[in-house]
Image (cartoon, rainbow, N blue to C red; front, side, top):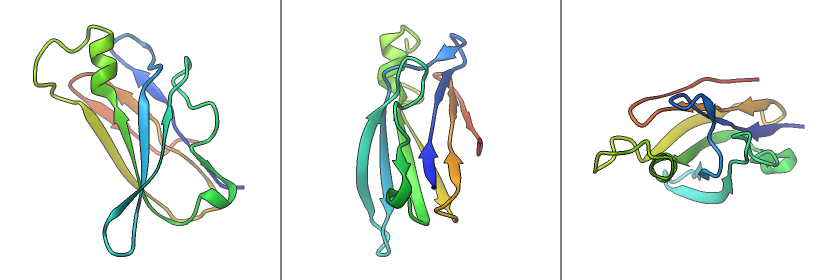
Length: 118
């Protein structure tokens, strides 16, 4: 059964980033984006359930958008206005809907990194 999961690490504080809103959008054949859902990270920086699982996950291009600006402000990590990083979009492609796609985010108010996890 295929699934999409994510987690967020706050690399300034050295902790999981809790209570971050995460939007999932899917690229449509006409080039527009369709909003699929919004989830939130839990105390471990993960979502309580996979973002997508089973028949929900299909081959195609997706975008996870992490609302990190609000998180940085809530934790006193964003002193400058406007924020250098506010919404962090990660665009990726699912080729095999039966596989597990783990898309983590490691973030600071000034930089971020991702990779295909397991």
